[in-house]
Structures are given as structure tokens and as C-alpha cells.
Image (cartoon, rainbow, N blue to C red; front, side, top):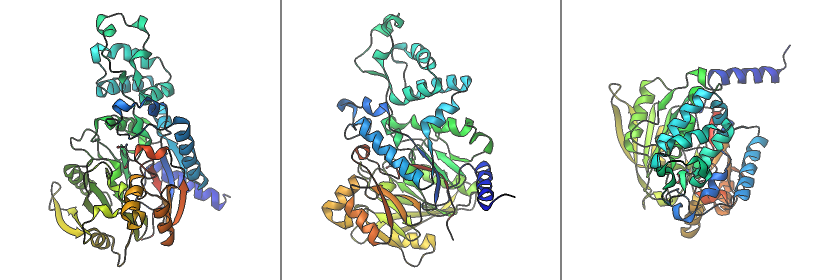
Length: 428
Ligand SMILES: NC(=O)NCCC[C@H](N)C(=O)O
């Protein structure tokens, strides 16, 4: 006879097989998460291209890796299964046909055919094992890597001064943004910034072809070929019926409406989408840099997104009269809109940096509001945001701190660095 533990784990496996993705809240106990360990791509950052590559400084590779490993260990110690994007991608591309197809896609999207270089680049990339090739594509390919003897044509020899054939993808460790789990499906995102557009190609291949996902008909609520941008840092699953999405520097109102229409039409459990407008600036690039859910009735917030009376623009989108229309109503207070949508009588917004002008600005810049909930009332945060962390504790939240000197240089915190794949359902 099987033990209770065996039955439970069998049930879990069956659940996983039926629904390899299952996320119906921001706070349900986290079971499986996707990370990307920072690699050589961060060493290919140089001052000339920092801004374009969306970094403010150059992380020191051994330390950023140590900090990231500490983050992953912290999650594993809590019983969370950690998957790595680079490993799933390499496993997917171990199929030679897919490998070729992927290289063609990445070369096209990287506009790598400078001076007609696509052919030698294709040969170069395909000469590696799938794991090495994935690392190489993520790290970027320098022009000087291709042996001079292979450059036989004038156009190959007459290169311009730009050092890369393929730009590095240093933002990949922010797995939250290129794709986002919603219910049993996901969005594979059309990213706003050119520096990040190729990132979601990895998830598109993984969902379609990796054995963990391929045969499960995972719904893609919005795909990366959609013409208006959306990024995962703006997509917050508040319950199995309510989603909040930031209308931000990165996410467009068009994509939000299209996603809402698809969710309503394709029989998902979701009934309301809250479009939350935030200032369009670098420091607040996504909704999750200024607002995250930490418990059933508690949220972090950066006071800088609200007007003097707590006023904001929040639109509630609900199913309309047919599949091409949504009903939209406006609310001017986030707290009230959340209470209404979640059916709560009380709700607490915990201000980043305690609301102090200097501390909240400093700690928001270092992702003090960007918490990753691993269970209701339990969050992972950066250690450097000590004022926000202390305030969370005063509100009864268990705060699990991780190291953050180098990780924070990319302007993202624990939520940005993680893509939940499976969470337990929360109580209703
Ligand atoms: N969800 C997030 O806020 N992700 C952080 C992304 C930081 C990255 N350097 C970017 O600008 O896209």
C-alpha cells in the first residue's frame, strides 16, 4: 500500500502532467519557478552600450553568480523546484532540426546579417553542442570570435567598429518579463525594448517543444508576434478571477485589452482585469517595481505612484456583450478598486521605505517594493532595503532576505528574477 506521502507526490505528478503551468495567485505556496543564472552576458556589458542594454552599471560576474546561487538555494531550501531557462532551452534544442530553426530565427531577429555575415555565424553557432550554443547566444557573439581565416569575402573582412555580431542579453536573469504564467497558460511577450525582444523566443520554443510542456496544449493567451508590447513585470495574478496589469513604459493599453478579451473568450477562470496606470519612467518600469502582493490583504506600494489623495487611474475590464468587446469602468483609487475586485473589507498598502521621501526613493530604486511571495505572508526580498523589510515584518510578514549588491545593478528584484510555473491554490 502507498504511504500518504507517496499518494500526495503521485497526485502532484499527475497534476503537473495535466497542467505543467498553474498559477492562480501572486501568493500561493510556490512549487516550481523558472530562473536564469547570470552568465557571460553581463561581462559583455561596456559603458558605451549600457543604456541601450538597460543597465546602470556593470555587475561583477563571480559575485552576481554567488548572489544568484544564494537566491536559488533559498528557494530550494523551502522545497521549491528551481528550473533554469538555459537548461530547458538547451534540452529543447538538442533536436537538430529545432536547433537549426532556432538559429535562423535568432539570426533574423538579431539583424545579424551585417555585411552578409549570417552564413558564417550560422555555421559557427551550429558547431557547438546545444548547451554551449544557448550560452553563446545568450552571452552575445563578438566579431573577433570568428576566425579570420574563415572570413574570405571582402564584406566579411571590411567590418565596421561595432564589436558584436549578436548583442548580449544581460537582462535574461529577469525571467519574469519575457513570459508570464496566468492560470494554466501564459503570455509569451512582445517586449517593448529592442534590447529584450529576442528573450521571449526561448520560451516560445520551450513551451512548444520541451517534453515537460509540449503535449499539454498549454494555452498561450497572447503570443510574441502581437504588435503591441506587454511585459511580465506588469502582469500580477491577484486571484483566480482577477488580474492587475500595469499600463506602463513597457506595457500598452492595447495589449492589455487584447489579453483580457482572450482570457474572457477562451474560458479561463479570469473575470476581471484591472489596468493600473503608473508613471512612465525608468525607475518605475513595470507595475511590480512599485506594487506587489504579499498576503491575502496586504500589498507593497511605492507612494510615488499615487497622487496626494491616493488618486490613480485604474480601469476595470470585464466581459462585454460579445467576444470582441470588454466593458470598462474607471476607478480613481487603487486601494478601493482592489477591495472591490477582491471582495475585501480591509486592505493594507505598505509603503516602500516607510514613505520617507529619501528612503522610499532609494529603496524603490533598489527594488524595495519588488517582493517575491513564496507563500501567503512570506516574501523574499533584497537585504539592502532594510527599512521596507522592517516595515513588512511589523505588518506580520515573514521576510526572507537575499544578497543584493550586484543583482540589484540590473534594476530588478526577487519578483523580476523569477517566473512562477506552479503555485498551490490559495483559500477563497
Ligand atoms: N519586472 C521587472 O521590473 N524587471 C526588471 C527588468 C530590469 C531590466 N534591466 C529592464 O530594464 O528591463
